[in-house]
Amino acid sequence: MTGIGEFYGGILHPLLVLSHALPLVVFALMLGQRGMRAMRFSYPPYILALAAGLLLAGFEVQPALPFQEILLLFAMLCGLGVAAQRSPPERALAVIAAFIGLLVGMDSGVTGLDRRETFAALLGCWLGATLLLMMVAGVAEMAQQAWQRVALRIIGSWTTASAVLVLALLFRPLS
Image 1 (tube, rainbow, N blue to C red):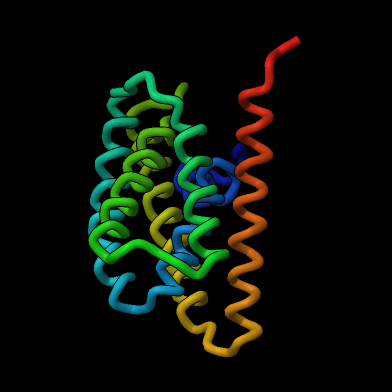
Image 2 (cartoon, one colour):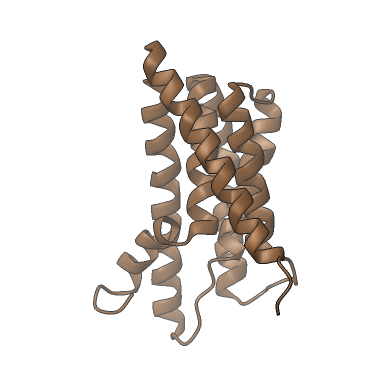
């Protein structure tokens, strides 16, 4: 983003890239539905994997993976779990957190900047993606009333529908 600097642009990056925002938000909702224990269990692998992915992106180590499609698939599956109010065991949540963190990090590479600017942007992205996950999970965890739980399930179903629509557009034949 021009005019705000690399660090602040990095902070906003996870919010502005649909294939990053959807899985982060819906996975955070899933963690919030499971409660504080699941959040404490999943944050460390997420934070470390996100940092590792960002470092790989900073040094331009990019395997040929369809990051966007994989992240949208995670968003779809997590959205189904939120909508059904079912989530995997805590160990599986930690593994999912690590995968999402690694994929978001590796897909957040920047080009055309010098090393200092690149790592400022990646540090901002790390901070933004970490805060996004923790804040959304915290808000979801506070949802105690029945209507609040229903609202979370609706958001989960909308996220699933959004991910399916974007995946359908990505896989449509070009004419």
